[in-house]
Image 1 (tube, rainbow, N blue to C red):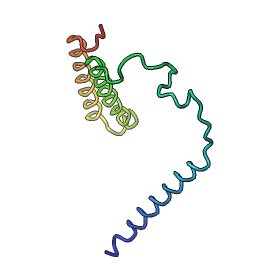
Image 2 (cartoon, rainbow, N blue to C red):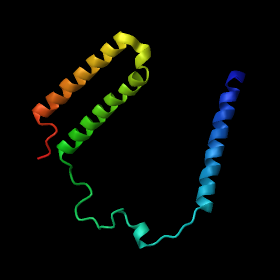
Image 3 (tube, rainbow, N blue to C red):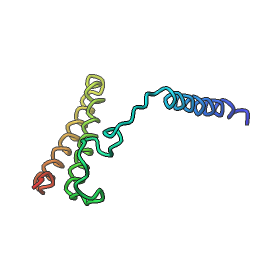
Image 4 (cartoon, helix red, strand yellow):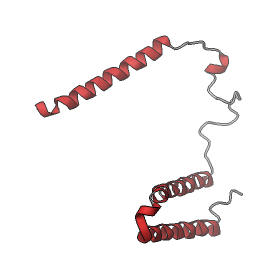
Length: 117
C-alpha cells in the first residue's frame, strides 16, 4: 500500500486546493444581482416558445458533419509540421486521407445533407 501513498497525497492535495479556490471565489467575488443578471436568457428576450421544443434533425446533422470534418482536418496539423520527416509514404497517406475526405464531402453534398431549406 505504500506505493500508492504519493498518488493518495496528490489526489488529496488536488481536492483540497480545488476546494480552497472555490471557497475563495465564493467569498471574494463581487455579487451585485440585478434583474438582467437574474434573467434566464443572455439575449435579454423573454422566452417566446416552449423550452422543450423539438429542433429540426437537419440542425443536428449539420452539427455532426461539422464536428467530423473539423476533427478530420485537425489530423492534418501533425502531418504538415512533420512533412520533411515522413517522406513519400507519409505524403501518400495524406493524399489518400484527403481523397477520402473529399469523396465523403462530395457524397454529403450530393445527398443534400448540407442543404438547410
